[in-house]
Amino acid sequence: MKILFVCKWNRFRSRTAEAYFKKINKNKKITAESAGIFIGSYPLDKIQIKVAKEFGININGMPRAISAKLLNKTDLIVITADDVSESLFTPKLQRVIKWNIPDVEKAGEEKKDRKIMKKIFKKIDRLNNELQNNGAKIKWKQ
Image (cartoon, rainbow, N blue to C red; front, side):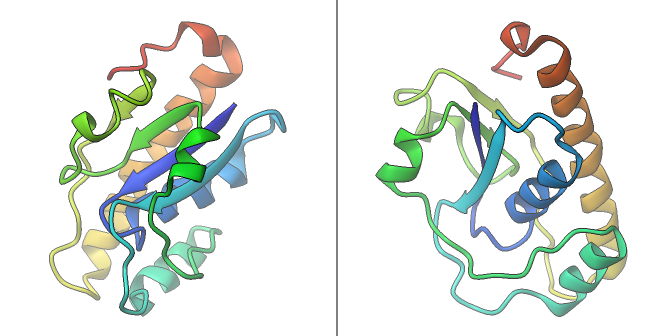
C-alpha cells in the first residue's frame, strides 16, 4: 500500500505526516510520500524544522507538487489540510481521508507549530494502528 499525504504547499503539514508515519510504521509493505496541491517555492520555516527535530523527525527537503505519476502509484490519499478539498481526488481515487488541520498563519509561531504537529502525530498513530490491525476495514472517507 502506498499512502500520499497532501496539503496545500507541501511545506509543513503533509511533510510532518510523511516523516512521522515513516518513523513509526513497522510494516515495510506500507510506504508513504507527501506532496502539495501547489509547490511551495519559498524556504521551509526554520522554527518548524527545529520543532520537528525536537520530535525526532526531519521535514527538510524541497517541497513538491502532486503529479499524475505520483497519483497513479497511490492507494490512499490523506489530506492533512483544512484548505484542500476532497473533490480534487474523489473521481480518481475512492480511498481518501480528510483531516481538517489548519495551516499556521505566520511563520515562526513555535507554540502553534507544536500544537499542529501533536495533532498530526495523534492522527498518524490512529491511522497506523488501523492499518496494522485491520487495513481492509478502514473507513476511508473520514
